[in-house]
Image (cartoon, rainbow, N blue to C red; front, top):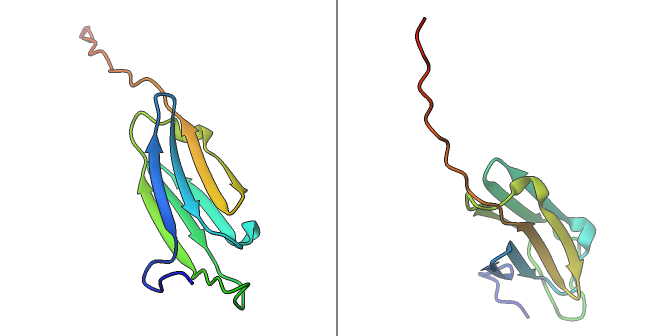
Length: 105
C-alpha cells in the first residue's frame, strides 16, 4: 500500500538531449491524468477514480515543475506505460540576444 502522505513516487531526469519527469503510478487510468504546460511551468495532475484495486491506492494529486530555460516547452510529449507516466521534451540551445544600436534620425 502506498504511504498516505505521498501520493506517488516521481523523478526529474535530464540527459544531454532531453528533460523528463517520471511518475510511478501503477494501476492508474491514463484518462485520469492531465498534463499541462503554461509558460515555463509543467503541471501534472491525477484525479483518482473510486475504489482500491488489488491493494493499491493512489490519491488524487497535482504536481508542478519549473521547466528549465534550455527545454523546448513547445514540444512536450507524454505517455503512460507499465505503470509509469513519462512526460518529456527535447532540450534546445539557449541563444543570447545581441544588443543592437538603433540609429536616431
